[in-house]
Length: 97
Image 1 (cartoon, rainbow, N blue to C red):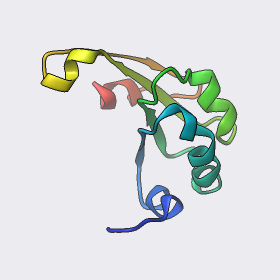
Image 2 (cartoon, rainbow, N blue to C red):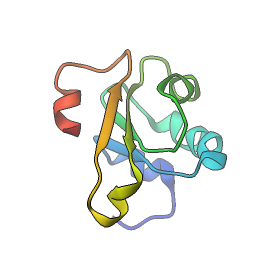
Image 3 (cartoon, rainbow, N blue to C red):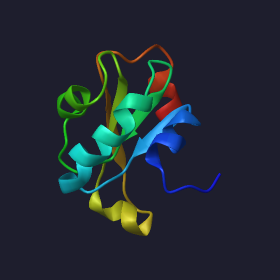
């Protein structure tokens, strides 16, 4: 699928990777929120944006996981931590691992 429409991408995805720079988080969240369902998992790597921030921008009960990579991942020598949001289901964390 090739598209420039974020809503179309969300509509056709089970897992949505939210990888935008912090100034663009609100705009992109507003674009995808109407297409998001509770069946989809949102995985965010947006720097400095908390799960709570993301959850407030998306529909209620959105399943959100925040991944926090450290700088050495750029050269494949780092690690990433992750945290699950309040609406995540059993198995969501396993998917991110």
